[in-house]
Amino acid sequence: MNELMSLKFWINMRPGALETGAFRAMLVFIVVLAALTFAFYFFKKQKQFGFYKKIFDRLNNLCLANTIIGLFLIFFIFEQLPFLAMRIWLLVWVIGILAWLGFIINAMLKIPKIKQDKAKEQDYQKYIP
Image 1 (cartoon, rainbow, N blue to C red):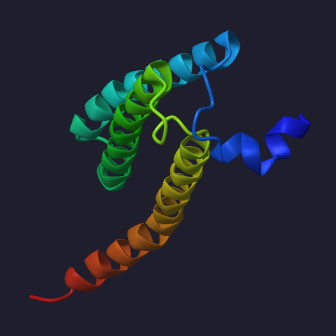
Image 2 (cartoon, rainbow, N blue to C red):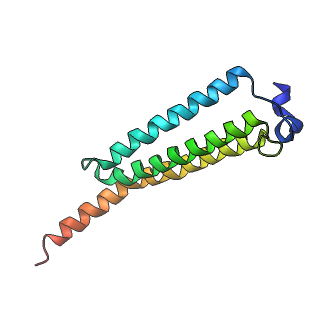
Image 3 (cartoon, rainbow, N blue to C red):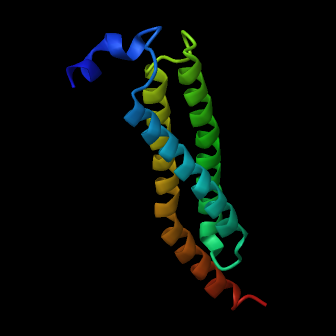
């Protein structure tokens, strides 16, 4: 655990191959992202979701982009490319996913207000000839 806290672990130019458990966990995470990409793609095609269609579109983009980035990271680690296989890229990738999810959650929290504003607008419009 102390190794994870050292700067040398994260910015080592030749970190070596991932341990088997970490490599499998990363592969499972990428497979889950790919499956979610297909699921969100089909969800955004449905008409019944209305306001949430844009959220599914954003989640689809998140999963697709991070599936591709994850595959590149696995390739770089597997091939042990000096700069691109650094562990810091994994940390940057995870922080990027969390930030992206934060923006999506922020957009989801605004949906009830948008629904309320739309209902008020429709109520106002029904009295206008």
